[in-house]
Amino acid sequence: MKAGLIGEKLGHSFSKPIHEQIADYTYDIMPLSREEFPVFMENRAFDAINVTIPYKEMVIPYCDFIDEKAAEIGAVNAIKNVNGRLHATNTDFDGLKWMIENHFDISGKAVAICGSGGTSKTAFAVCRALGAKEIIRVARNKGEPFVTYDDMKSCTDIEVILNTTSVGMLPDIMSAIVDLADFPNCVGVIDVVYNPLMTSLCYQAQKRNIPYIAGLEMLVGQAVSAVEFFTGKAVDRSVIKEITAELYHDKQNIVLIGMPSCGKTSLGRKLAKKLGMDFVDLDAEIVKAAGKTIPQIFEESGEAAFREIETAVAIEAAKRNHTVISCGGGIVKNEINMQALKLNGFVVYIDRRLEKLISGGSRPLSKDAQAIKKLKQEREHLYKKYSDVTVENNGYFHNTMEKLLEVWNENTHY
Image (cartoon, rainbow, N blue to C red; front, top):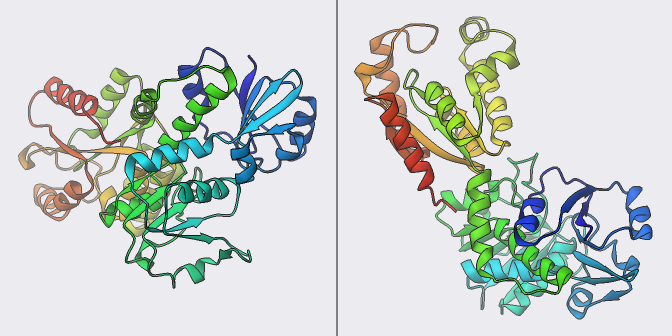
């Protein structure tokens, strides 16, 4: 079977490993420009395809048969070629419904759906099927039945916010469709974006202790339904959570934070090698970006300039997957850095006793024992605030490594 995914920008897609784990066909990622799209659809040189942004509505005229579900929604995300005739459905409905039902009860609640594309139409149908009390549709520069984002702020009774736009998706990971501070009655956040694993909108929810879910489980759920549609064979729904958890763990980064000389870089390199992950040292990336050493940056431009470069480097590193990231000691001084790194990252605080931290050397803010003591007093609460777990590095290197591997293998953050 010749199967795959079409869309405009697909560098972020996780669909290939998902489909190939569920089914026994090869699944190709096929990015198409607006000019290439009609030629591809007219040629029909495929057995089965999934469709994503921005073609979920644009494929409809090319389809010969559209099932009732997709027709009612007005968007298609799965097509199979049956003897040259294109049969279409919408498995996003199944995936989103599965994800919401497994994490929220939206019956009787006021739900705001952000976005006006094909996925927003799917979300509207799902929310209606799940018994939402009120569905507010929000979009930029649209008339009825949509309200604007400014008007949305006056809807103070909104209880669940559901983002169906690409805002917050790689590469623009720091963006969020709304500010949750404007919605005091919000009790749930749902984001269909799955890369990064936790979006900036979900990060806001986490900070406010609001239950949230990003789109990875929806992606896997709709893929299961798509495989059934493509092959005609039933798939056990238990694989949805299993594959989601495996994929989340595989794509997640390990972010090491802690005081200068606590062992982040040496531990990080060894950990990456053990786990077959990439390794990034943010201090080395700062030197590369600035074209000068860290002491030179401090001496010539001051700490503020250094922190600005550090933030830019941190955000770029945060876009990676399956990477161990060793951070400079002061990374926690700016919440933007930690927000970025936590979107794809499991954060480990490497704690080392004061007397074991090395003084002097090339670290501008830790030139003597007194400076190190002061830094630790200032930063320790931030290391604890932003970390998911603490690992002490006071004994043998081997023992610390074993503990790091243990906490990583036990990581059930998803």
